[in-house]
Image 1 (tube, rainbow, N blue to C red):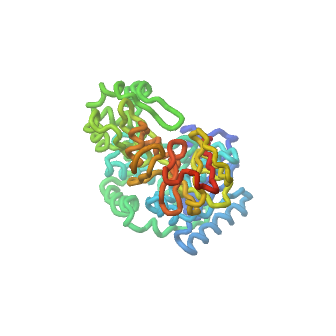
Image 2: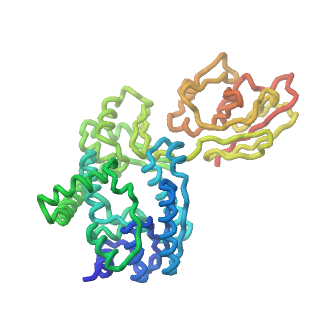
Length: 443
């Protein structure tokens, strides 16, 4: 059976797509993705290509892009290219370059898929990637879930080359004379995955020449065991976790009976990637540390008085908006601010409206989230107060306060906890001649 027939058979076996689906191929220019693009084009599938230029490798990044563009043009395939400022994104979000590139590409792929109505996003990971992922997860202690490796289908993403070994891909790109480019970073053992591929797996193959096939069988066993475990865990999870518009809620009294069973706790929270160490900390904090936040790579979990709140982390390039003397409207998160200058001194009793003595303001004003150490002089209260104490008095949870707009004067003073309280120092008085009115409304 030739590789094209094997591909079609694998797609059918794993239910990756329907024959007339529109598929967005993610093509980097490496041999794996170039072979995938070649096979999908030969199969006559409805496809387009998405290429990310992360601008990390100078001229090599430009040559990768040129190769993919030429392949698309030669084969009459629509192509979409995005050039990312990956280093800046990584710095702003305080994450690694690798994590930044991953976030940027998958976010963009999904945006393209949704906007252009593609059915699936195809990624060219192969059997050796599958094995490397399991070994990497094994070294990190991710448990039985991590030993499933790379799933053939996850949400809208499919991986149609998981049936092919790396050596087979090497053979077929030569057989079909497919042009490709090597990313030299793939040969550096400073990255854990590369070290597994270059230094560790060859030793396994010396012990067992059929290492890939045997390990693939083991992964199947791991997957079957995990699925069996989920038949027990899933009904409990469904009973505990309530989805809301912003995340998930678990009533503490409902979780109490399972609290001391750490292995079960780990499986119940496995979809949020909380480690056993974090969940062990949760056990210790239970009933004693209300307000504590626990972290996984993608989620926050707040231990509140009566409930657990779980929320996905927001990865955004900036958490600030600016109000200049000319601004009329500005958006921040789910809020819209309207600004106006007048001589109207009438006080309005509305949480959504704040009026400031214009001549005390230093532009530009900034809208941001609260920061540790923030304090202000609340209108109607005596003296200075920390925002954290104000939030506690108002029974505002840690998750909620992250989304409260804080309006800050150009000198660093806090002017307004929007829709809660303004600062006493900037209120209008009998001496005020000019007024800045801010109206804050949520979407």
